[in-house]
Image (cartoon, rainbow, N blue to C red):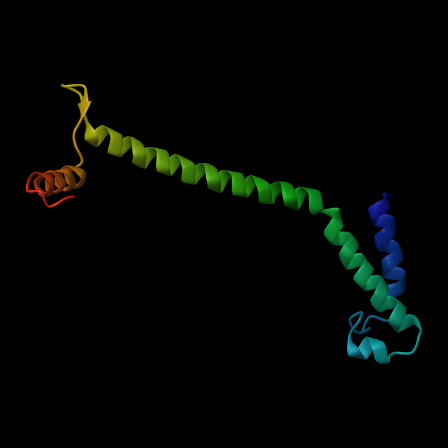
Length: 120
């Protein structure tokens, strides 16, 4: 019997004595006199904490891996979008990039304003 199984057997011994014990720390628990029901509630709370810790490393590893994969998927999607945008803007014949129409329009407007003396 490993330590986890031994712990669970010990917990069963106490919790079977008072299966309907109220939750540890609740008003009903506080109202109980010291005895098997109060002890069973404390043991049940301790076991819940211990069980949470039993699988903590595996849960954290899975959570970190899921976050890593989500970040990688987002990074890959951004790379694909950027690559498509790059290909659309690049003129392979001349080896240069096509000007962005919005930027070209803004430069044209700024140039016209400057040549008319509208910019100080």
